[in-house]
Length: 199
Image 1 (cartoon, rainbow, N blue to C red):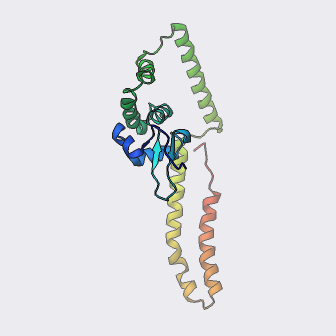
Image 2 (image 1 turned 30 degrees about the vertical axis):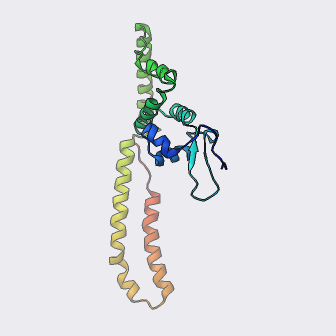
Image 3 (image 1 turned 120 degrees about the vertical axis):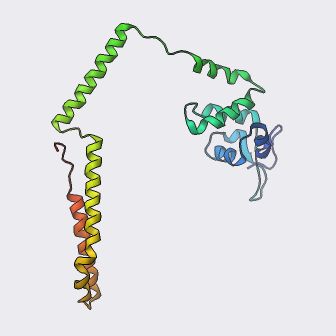
């Protein structure tokens, strides 16, 4: 927290006007460390004191910390790039050139080697599955779904099975134990279920 904003620093509301990025998003970026403390800070001593920041340094740091391939970060990164271009195009241009480069070509021999490696990995996975040390995700999901459905059906039958027993009891402890034991028995069945890889 600073008592006075350093020279050249501006409020995040002014930064929103420069970049088009909402103050809420800017505040979140500061709190998450995308904009370092030495380029952004609260100015004032009251609970509602506003954030100030060094606009150029904050924009560059934030821009470099974002992932160009991440869909959720792309829009903010593009907004920052538009602002950064107004004072330092060199920050943006290398990234643009890098993205425009074509995929490096590989030799026929390298391609064959990569294909052999891929086939070997597939064969290894198939062997592990046959030996039972590897279980497919689909099989696990199917068995978990079946177990969940069985547990659900079992829990829903508990009231029918124990209502008469509970109504015949005057002892609260016995009623509690009857309900508890019925639920615990069904949960124990779920705990005893094992994935069977060969099925």
